[in-house]
View 1 (cartoon, rainbow, N blue to C red):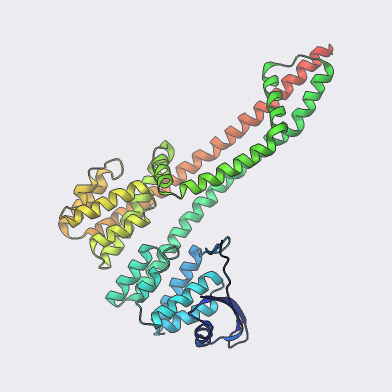
View 2: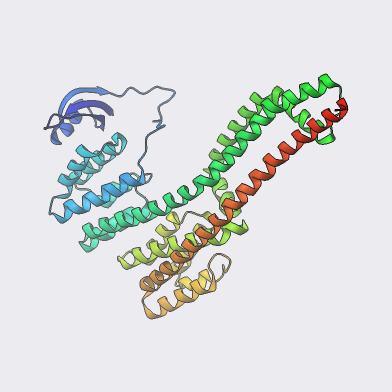
Length: 404
C-alpha cells in the first residue's frame, strides 16, 4: 500500500511525498523513525482501469545520482553509519520521486539487506554498473571509494553529454530558423503572390506553379499534416524503445559515414572503461562482461559482448571472440586485449585503450561539429535563396506581362 504524507522536520521545514507500507500504522512508524512529525497521511487510491503508476515529469537525473553517490561517500568517510546517511539524504533530497526511493532503500538496508541488493530494486535509477560497483565496494570493504568513483564517472559522462548537446544547439537553431522562414514564405508571402498573379492573368513559370500547388495543398491539409507528423514522431519514439527498434537504430547509426567512427569510439571507450573498472574491482570477468554489455548503449555491441561472456564461460579468451567482429572491434583493440590477457594486466591494458579512445572521441567530435555547422548554413542558404529566387522570377514575369 502507498500513502501520501505531509510532515514537518525537526527544524520546522514542510515535507511531502509517498511512503510504501503494509498499513497506515507501519507507514506512520517509518516516517517517525526518520524524525518527521506527520500532519497528514492518506492512502493512495488507485483506479481500477489505470492501476499502473504514471509519471510525466518524474524520474531521476544524472545530477541527482551524482549528488547521491558523492554525499553518501563523504558521510561514509566521516564514519556516519549507512542507514543514518541514507536518512539524511531522504530529508535533504529535493526530488520527491528520488526521495521516496532512497527511503525504501534505507528501509531495506535497515532490515538487513545489502546496500547493492537494495539499489538493484530500482534498475531504472541505478544501472547494473552502479550496483556492481557498489557490490564490489561492499565485498572489498571500500564502499566509500566505490561511491566516489561512481560520482566521478557519472560526472564525466554527464559533462560529455552536455558538451555534445551544447554543440548541437547552434545547428538546431539554424534549422529551426530555416523552417520558420520557409513556413512564413509558404503560408503568408506566396498566397499574396498567387493572388497577384491570378488578378493580372499572367502565366507563371513552371516552378512557381509547383509552389502554388504546394501552397494550396498546405492551406487545405496543414492541420492534418501537423497531427500526422506528431503522431508519427510519437510512434517512432515508442518503436525505438522496443527490442526491434533499438536493434534497428543501433545498426542504422553505425552505417552513417560521418557518425560511424565517432560512435564506434564512444562504445569502445564505454566498454573498455566499464570492463576495466569492474574487473579491477574484483568482479568476476563473466559478470563484468554482462554488466558492460548492459551499459554499452548499442544492441550490436551488446550482442557481441554477451556472446563473449558465454564463450569465456566455456574457456575461450576475450580476444578470440572479439577478433571475429573486426568492423565493431578494430585489430588494435583485440591485440591490446590479447596482450592484457597474456600478461594478466587486462584492467590496466583496457585503461590505456580508454585514454586513447577518449582523445580520439574529442578530436572526432570537434571535426564532426566543425563540418556540421557550415553544412547547415549552406543548406539554409540554398532553401531560402531558392524560395527568394522563385519570388523574384514570378514578380519579373508579372512585370513583363504588364509591359512595364
